[in-house]
Image (cartoon, rainbow, N blue to C red; front, side, top):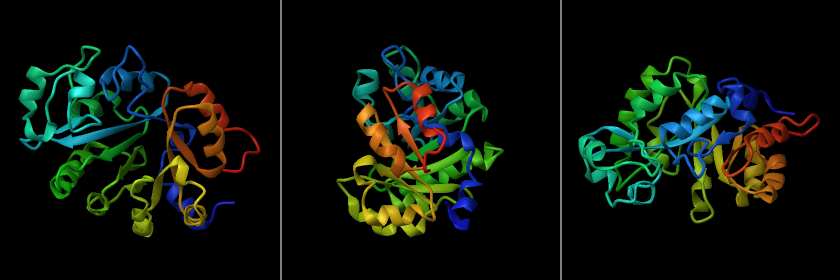
Length: 248
C-alpha cells in the first residue's frame, strides 16, 4: 500500500502515465523517434510519451535525443552549435519530417496525452536550458500532464511546480545519493533491485527505462510504478501494468 506522501505525489500526475510511456514517441521502422509522426502515433493510441529537448545556438528548444543529429537525420551536426534556422533548412529526419521544436510538439499534442520531458544538458548549459524550458512550460495548462526528468540534477533543481524525476543509470549510480531532492526517480531497469531504490519507492513513484523485451517487462513490472518502453506492443504493456491484483 502506498504511503500518504506517495499518494500526494501521484495525485500530481496524470493517471495515464501508469499505463506505460512510449520512449521518444511511438516510433517504428517508418516513423523516426522524437518526430511529430511518432508523437502523433502515441497520441492516436492514447499513450503517454517521452521526448528530449536541447537548446540551440540561438536559444531555441528542439526535440531530439542525441546532441548530434547524425543518427536521426543521416547528417552530422551538433544541435547546440547550430541555430534553429540552420537545423530547419539543412536537416530532415529519416522519415522526411523536420526536426521538431518543443513549441511544435506542444501544439501538436495540446495536452491530449501526458508527456515526460527530458532535459538534455550539453557542456554545462543546464541553467540556460532549464530556464528556457520553464518559460516554455507556461503553455501547459494542467501541470499533471508534464513530468520532468534529467540525468543532470543541477537542471532539475531549477524546475519548479512540476513533478521531477532524477534519471539514474548503471554508469553513474552515485547520483542515486541525490534522490531525496526530487519527487521521483527514473531508474535504469537493472538498478531496480537496489535496497535504496526499493525503500525510496515506499514514499515516491518510480519509473523504469528502457523496457524493450518481454524479459525486461516481466522483471520491471513488480518493481516500478510505471515504465518507459519501446519495440513492444503498447496494448500489452498497458494490460500488464493494469493487471488486477498486481502489487503496484
